Amino acid sequence: EAQVTQNPRYLITVTGKKLTVTCSQNMNHEYMSWYRQDPGLGLRQIYYSMNVEVTDKGDVPEGYKVSRKEKRNFPLILESPSPNQTSLYFCASSLAVNQPQHFGDGTRLSIL
Amino acid sequence: KNEVEQSPQNLTAQEGEFITINCSYSVGISALHWLQQHPGGGIVSLFMLSSGKKKHGRLIATINIQEKHSSLHITASHPRDSAVYICAVPRTDKLIFGTGTRLQVFP
Figure (cartoon, each protein chain N blue to C red):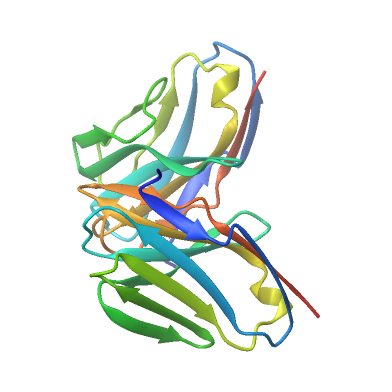
């Protein structure tokens, strides 16, 4: 089954404790992306990747890191999380930015 | 002004009504996405269109590239259509989203 898998689905943690949200896709997609969704602001792009070893900043990259060492995986890293990063996060993949997007189920992150 | 504007923000309807959700954008685009987000939070892609019209079941999406406007129509609406509908456009290699239209359909 074609899917994008994110883990964990829920996480409550404390300020400053490094965390990683994993994202994996099984569709051989080149384009992968991370978004955060906040009430009143909608979805905003954090980082995206056009292919292996090619990543670039979206509109809200501050406080986040990503890597794309393999085509299927695109982890989101918060080196020193802060409360303003409390949000709902989505990973997505597609053949290209102008092709249908496949979303993971989301990760609800709470930073205390 | 946001690059992608949706209207209305909220919409309530009775079952069976015809629904229209609008999306206007200010950038030149190669395609426009319509997404659906159910109360559980998951997001699915409904349509990706670059011209004309697409239909899937009771959902119809249209786009007018010259006017930079797209509409999503739902015919014979049903309570299970209750969701947030989001349009998104590519800006170079990024995706820019509207803030969504929350639709509630009552029996």
